Image (tube, rainbow, N blue to C red):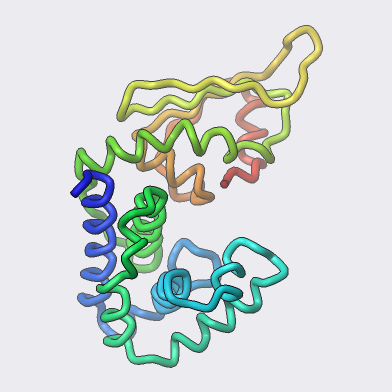
Length: 218
């Protein structure tokens, strides 16, 4: 079994274990996903894997969001124990899709950093695997940031640094920004959880202002 597959299975098992340990009232606490409580998030993962083609497409296609939302509402009518069983036994394709490392890591943090207010230790294997995704996400996560800005993204887990320029600056007069943190926090930032990502931001005051206003996320 590959390390990636192992990590996906472990992250999913952690999600299921968290749900198993919840009191009934805790299924209604908010997560980091806007407007979703724990029950919504669990239902989303099941619909993502087992829903109809239209309901699954609604995750990424705005004109089909209503299909995805309707499927979540329907799934939430099932008992919590049944949701847990469905999540505990994923379809065969789930552990084979490398992107599910990010999917389950981020949703685990959505649970823990939301209304549950819990922390956990990130394994060295997971941290290293998340570092592999940092350069890929950096290509897209900052596309809506307004320039002219030159920023560096420093992954403290791997020691790697990515530098990019956004917009065009006359005479190369870019404002400069540095974002640094371990790979799990950088992933959360680039997946739209910036307010909850524990990263260090430094640079020119103008660049910091651009960062505060930026819509960062894949």
